[in-house]
Length: 337
Ligand code: OGA
Ligand code: NI
Image (spheres, rainbow, N blue to C red):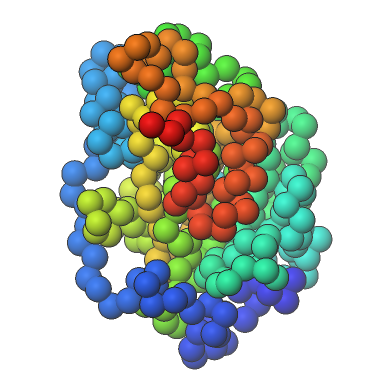
């Protein structure tokens, strides 16, 4: 509990040693250009057009922005607001949620739940909870602020619907046919809110290190502060935040199902010295026992499977144990040539 950055981060002048990343992975002083060609999918412009855009976006980038997404604008504002109010509460009010037990279905921690064994700590506080089906989990969510449960329930339901639409479009494009992404592949839906406080030495710290999402697919809602960067062709690029829209990031498990037609992008989060930043990450994940493998319909003599089958939970364990945030976690499952 005393670990929470919100307890102490505003009182310090320089970064504690354990938050300083090694020279090869810290952001340093390099100027990072913004990425100017993020693919945009407009869900309003009709199905066929949207599919074509998804196609381009997913093959080349692994991430895209979605506009006219159908999630109420006021709900986005309220969601960011209750999350901010949550992190702004005095620490006593949050104490009962603080936990480093990975199995807890609703937990608050600083950095990660591996705080006591990790090499470097991340400059963030994180609230993480399950939300599907909502009725199974809502009683575990924060009770304060008073509107939290109501707002996040609505957000979870609308995000569930949006993810179904997006996965349908992706499935159609890669040739999986309708309804491929059923409950087994999408049944674990996680709401994860990050609070990245202003940081005294942003060039030495990271909000999240270089990683590839272990999810099926991730929907990111940001505030107006920049922090997200993607790694492409050996270079980092900043992503301009778009607070009214979502950034969709493909996870490693959809990369496997697509047999490598889709790519899960490498990205990280940097901090800054003047502003705190909030990001809200809604991720769709397979149920732990689900089998993840290249979709059979995509496999033939000229398209052999690139990955072996695995249980989703086994992959998550590999991801966690390797401790490299997903850089190599799929290597163990690649079919050897
Ligand atoms: C993540 C992630 C980006 C952000 O949670 O996996 O990449 O801006 N978050 O917080
Ligand atoms: Ni990520």
